[in-house]
Length: 344
Ligand code: UD1
Picture 1 (tube, helix red, strand yellow):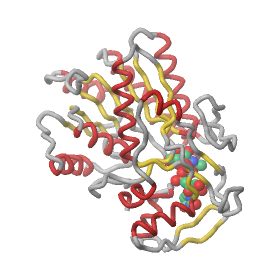
Picture 2: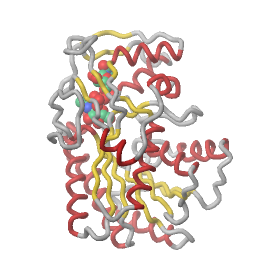
Picture 3: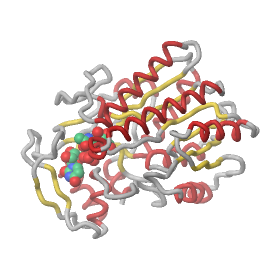
């Protein structure tokens, strides 16, 4: 299967989800090309990916290459396709992770967010089209929903992001739908709406390592655990939930990586289509439950203080994952304990 699928271009392959997906692709015998600007990731990820591969006795000859550059640079993407397609194995699939992802930052720098996320994707699609590469998996987010405080959010629920980051993700989904509908005989496109990916590769060699101060809860818990931060702020304990703290659907990043590969194999085996899928476990966990589980499996204490609610936060964001589970014939396997252990 892996050879007939050609080479897979992973944009943002040095980042959190991109690097874990790259490791899994190599493990399953796929050839990959990673591109990354390293604006919010480290080029060291490439070394880590190859270290894990050699620990797992994966033969890497001709299986991985890396190009440092930005999707805003059209010539750079053209060049990558030219170089890679002149080798024995052409780029046939793109898994597109590259993009800016901080909600808070996006409200301060909307032009930057729209430019990087949308223009970067348009450049990518132009070069893909030119090279007859029409298979794409796009990294979207549950942030596109309007969050009506439902118990489980399904793909059919109303969409209304509340920040520029979310707006840019939804705009890319619409752009990709337009592309598919205009040439629907030949594009295979899937948008995966992630819930809350956490955890890390079990080797401990890869993880979530954003440049600068993290905003998301898991890297912040790690910072408290390692002593870099004195305590975790819990944003409100007066929500209408069992313990008063917010509920999220945390999914192990290795399960999320597998969801990409299952999606790629699915769209490869079917006629051209445009798919939208939630990727989550469907299990809600409160902030306090997450902290308690982290403390229990790692045998340490996470000091915290209850502070006021974060502006624009949501009480409950959990996936209705019935569509992805039935379509992919796959389900997330790793538990919250696994996420907390591997992530630390
Ligand atoms: C956030 C973004 C979302 C984005 C996602 C993944 C918002 C409103 N949403 O989701 O658009 O797709 O990240 O990058 O920013 N928490 C604390 N203390 C902290 C940090 C977080 O109590 O210091 C709580 C939050 O209230 C929330 C949970 O932890 O209940 C998870 O927060 P976070 O990791 O920021 O993710 P989301 O809010 O789900």
